[in-house]
Length: 257
Image 1 (cartoon, helix red, strand yellow):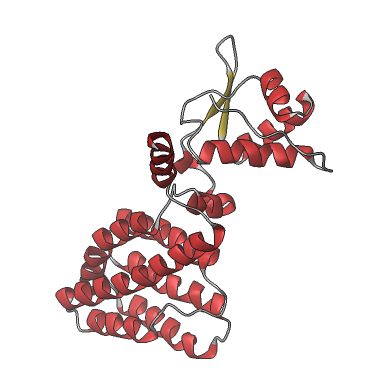
Image 2 (tube, one colour):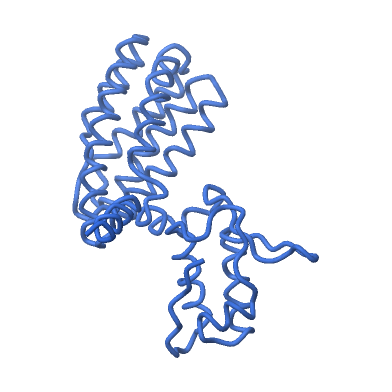
C-alpha cells in the first residue's frame, strides 16, 4: 500500500492528518471496506504521535469517512463514500471525481419528465398558487445566491405536487445535490438560469398539459445541466484536478517509454 506524506509541524496537526487520510481515501488508494494501517503505523508514516492520529481518526469517523470496528479484526475501515454527510465535503467529492455533473444529469433527466407529467395532472390550485407566488419573488431578489435557492425551491415544489411521495423525496435529494454543486463551483456573479423556463413549466401545469410539461421540464433540465458541466470543467481546471483514469494513463505512458 502506498505511503502518506509526512506532516509538517503546525498548530493543529490532527487537521493535517485528516486531510492526508481523506486524500488517500478519495483518490482511491484505500477502497470501501479496506482497513487503514494501525495507529502505530500511521504515526510512523505521517511523522506524528499516536494521540494526533487518534484525534484525526475520530474526526474522519464523525464525518462519515471511517467506521471503527472493535475486536481482534477491528480497526478503522473506509466507509461507502455515498454515505457521507456530503454538504461538508462536497468540494472534495467533486475534486476527486467521486460525484460528477454527469451523475446528476442522468438522475434528473430520468426523473424530471415524469415528475412534471404527474404534477400537471395532480397539482392542486393551492400548490399552483404557491409556485406562482414563488416565481413572482424572483423579480425582487437581487442576491444571486438567494436566487439559486429559489430556483431550486421551485423544483422542490414541483416534486411535492406530483402526487408520488417517493418521487418527492428523490427530487428533494436531487435538488440538494444540485444546490451543492452550484454552491461549490459557481462564481457568485454567474447566472446559469433562465427565469422564463419556470414560467413555461408552470403554464403547462395550469393547462393540465402533461406532455408539454414533461417536454419543457426536460429541455430546462438539459440547459441547466449543460451550464453546470461547463462550470465543473472550469472548476476542475482551476484546481488542476483530473480524472483518476487520466493519471493511470499517464503512468502507463511513462512506464512504456
